[in-house]
Image 1 (tube, rainbow, N blue to C red):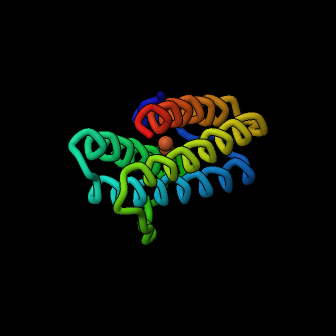
Image 2: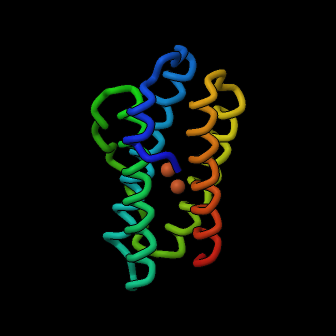
Length: 139
Ligand SMILES: [Fe+2]
Ligand SMILES: [Fe+2]
């Protein structure tokens, strides 16, 4: 994963409009997932699921932050997202969310013309694929 500081160091010289729109969509996705995992952590039925959902919430929040810094905008408000009282159901939902996230990042990485954007989107796709594996493990 590219550190935010490193990215800012390079600046964003040629961020085309389409990629900027994709970054905005990515921020929305990350904020939504952050809100979901925060809810799931809150409702966790044991310490293991609490730790997993907490870690996922933290990582998605970091993604939202990194992407916002790329556009030089504020991170924005987290939406209201509900979740289940049952861990198992939240892991099923997590599976769907991570599948969507990894598919989304692969798609935008493929079409981004800027090499640095490709790098960032592929790195995120990889992390979301790891999250997908985590969501399968504890289901
Ligand atoms: Fe993420
Ligand atoms: Fe994720």
